[in-house]
Image (cartoon, rainbow, N blue to C red):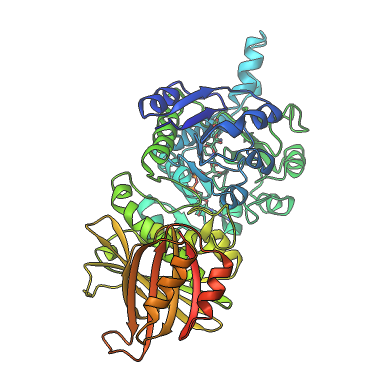
Length: 531
Ligand SMILES: NC(=O)c1ccc[n+]([C@@H]2O[C@H](COP(=O)([O-])OP(=O)(O)OC[C@H]3O[C@@H](n4cnc5c(N)ncnc54)[C@H](O)[C@@H]3O)[C@@H](O)[C@H]2O)c1
Ligand SMILES: O=C(O)CC[C@@H](O)C(=O)O
């Protein structure tokens, strides 16, 4: 088996390359490529490991037909076009905890640096000035810290600030009252935070809701002499408004690790009294970089080699332990999705995926994604488990997953039902011997078959002589029948009802033969299928 190929395109701790190699991937390390250079080589790779410098744009993704996974050694993935990657079926992962402590410590360092004006005092002292009277600081003890965003990093900042005997108030719409109590902080609305905080620190992602959360208007609501820290993302603060507020004294100090435009080689803020900055160093400690490099390489290799999914932003998680158990179910689910997609006519509006018996004990999302991949392949060639749920959503398909506790006739069963403008259509399958996907029902008719290769689905009046007629027709056209499966409606009835015939054949069935089969006496439906 050829090894999956991974490209590390940003500066990353060497442990990443070591782990990739140990886990069975071939790895190239090429930090600092231009977008054109990356575009020229990305087609060769199955995985791309990045930090923040590489921008994964639609143009790069279009040039990457083999790419299966992008791994961000860090938290923020704003340098990856995730919707576009999802549309291309590429998994995007990050390492959400590896650098949180380090970044929280950077925020605390910024708070202390602002409180005691350490950078300016350092520069002037080293300049030989000894400016002892110019740097009157403030204590942080007893002061109020306003956290905007109390997730991983925000809550670590809170714990350190409480250790420094600060009071902590937090604005975060997703912070529960219980979690606030657990953290020892007070949950408040944004205006209250702005009015009460002596120091404000930002720890949210950059979203439409958080962009310019510290706007001119909101900065005007702060306590006069507030000090502001941003170690999250540029764009959370209106930099022009911050400059004005520093000049007017509304804001006594501001410390930015991140800027609206990076690298920030120039800014009106540079040189402003009370302003300090670092070049996006929040995650830059040896410990954090080893953590994120190890994690990203482990996660990506796990996906490329074993199919395990951890910390993906566009796909449900799946442990390397679960992956082998789920693999035969994925094959079953994809074939059922494909079958129902090929058989159902009319406008598909809903799809329900039911799991019974052993299947009910497994993670539902990957099975759902595999059914959708099988179904959506009828509409597009480039569908896989990653992009199928997005494509289904785009088409307005209402997807439901149902887990039944009850025991049925099979010890494991997956049933897929699509709602169409012509009514519901349902197919069901099981695993034989734990890993052999097998169809056990079409549209309520019990029929057992492997879903494989080229097949022919026929519904006919259940009357003597039909099997001979279809056999003769295929034989006369040189088409060899591999397997032959029969079922009748209603299940267990005698002759005279409706029969279903599912044949596997050794070659695709020409259209002319399909037409001739349609013309046979008693035939209601003939459909060639392919798996
Ligand atoms: N400077 C660096 O080098 C560096 C390093 C790591 C992370 N980061 C950045 O730090 C930020 C926080 O990371 P994290 O790991 O704590 O993320 P997280 O997802 O754990 O926490 C983010 C928090 O923001 C909250 N939030 C979302 N929208 C909000 C809104 N409109 N108002 C208030 N709160 C809102 C969420 O509820 C969540 O609790 C991210 O932007 C990340 O990219 C920067
Ligand atoms: O990789 C870095 O140096 C920055 C990482 C940081 O911005 C993140 O979001 O994890």
